[in-house]
Image (cartoon, rainbow, N blue to C red):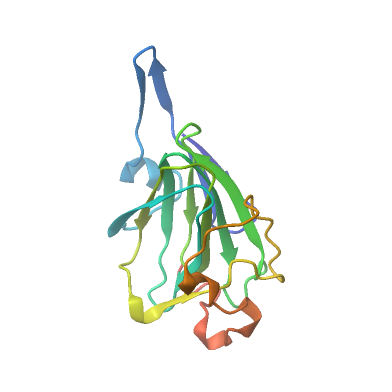
Length: 187
């Protein structure tokens, strides 16, 4: 398995070994021991799967407190996956990293607790899987508007399909600092 550190501390790209032949392929998508050896020693307590059509944009979501780390991958289709550092005091606060994840490239992205997460489906019938380090907590859920100009993400969809909830989130600069995670508190 290949592991790549991105420009955001803690955001990792995993490329599991894939074994294929004329019949298809096999990949180990998670082994606690193997991921611990790669530096990811965390309990995962909840798995989620979402289904999206092309140009559906979900995010940016976070929880605080009860921040969730997420190991994400695409089971069918393709997405442009994005993490935004919203940890107050982080040297990369307000910066983002994006990666194309697909069923074909088998890449996984780990987004540590304290970062906001979102993605845009690049194909129809996209199945997206999340392994989470904490349980979903509606009372501590927050979000950032998907097109925050201070963050400056260039999304791959001209007219993304976005939920009403996601279009009503504030800009990062408008969220009180006491409502955001702090750098170093989830180590």
